[in-house]
Length: 146
Ligand code: ADP
Ligand code: MG
Image (cartoon, rainbow, N blue to C red; front, side, top):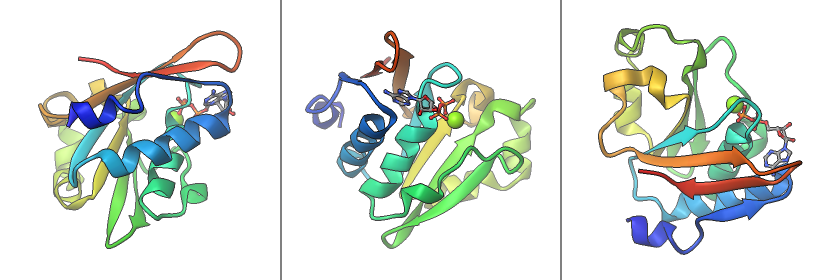
C-alpha cells in the first residue's frame, strides 16, 4: 500500500490548486475503506487536499468546505462516498461514537480526517498518516509520516 503512495509522495506544491491536484492523484491509489489522517497546522492546505481527494474519486471537490458546525460531511464519489471529518472542535472522542460516525466510516470509500489526534482511540490503527507542512510562502510539503 505504502509502496503505491511512494510513487507520488513526498511532494512539494506551490499553490492551492497544485495541492488539490495532488489529492486527486493520491485518492485512486488508496484501497477502498482507507482512513487518511491529515496532519498539519491551520492553513496548511488539508481541506484543499480533501477537495482533490473527492475530485480523484469522481466526486465534486468544489462542494468540500471546512465543516464548521457539522464536524463531518459525506461527498458522493462513484458508487460510494468520501467522508470528510474535521475533528478540530471535538472535545471527547466518545462524541464520534454517539454520532454514529463509526458506521459512516465503515461504509465510506475513503475517510479523510483533519485533526486526527482529536479522534483518540476512534482513529483506526491502520490509518494512513499524511503530513502537510508549510515550506515558505505558498510552498507546502506533503509526505507520509509514521
Ligand atoms: P487547512 O484545512 O489545513 O486549515 P485550507 O486548505 O483550508 O487549510 O487552506 C489553505 C490555505 O492556504 C488556502 O487559503 C489556500 O489558498 C492557501 N494556500 C497557499 N498555497 C497553498 C498550497 N501550496 N497548498 C494548499 N493551500 C495553499
Ligand atoms: Mg481544514
